[in-house]
Length: 200
Image (cartoon, rainbow, N blue to C red; front, side, top):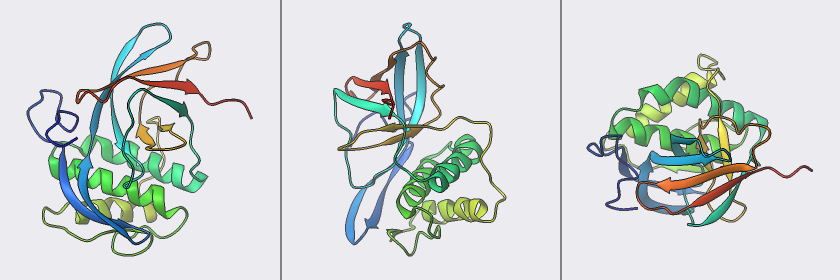
């Protein structure tokens, strides 16, 4: 993704990502934390641009891949992600705020029902050069305190059983539709097909 437009604003001008050093269950990485710009078409051919964030800091995004609409995350994690999406997405206007949102999403997705602390637990962030970690922790503290709660903004998780899951606020797929075709990020992420979660 380095040097791509996936992490840029709608005018392709401002970077909406930053390099960050983090660790998940003892595996450390330095990578981009930020927001993807993507496009989707529903079964009726209606095209919609949307924003997405990764949920697994150690996985990549695969091209030409099937995604299910649904999640294996706990109800607590989904409620926390929804609270983040509802209250913080509108604050993502700079590279620092985009990285902060991504760090907070990784923390929520990987701590389950545990405490939301970017300095301890399963997921940690070791650098704060630009203030992204502190901004993310501030948002997480608002969720923990109950100040930020699940709201009206829809949370959709696109699930890949092998690689990266994505969190977005893409409008729900209409009932008669077979799925959503993700046309890819502007970085040429390729065509990703979404389909409704199979009935259990």
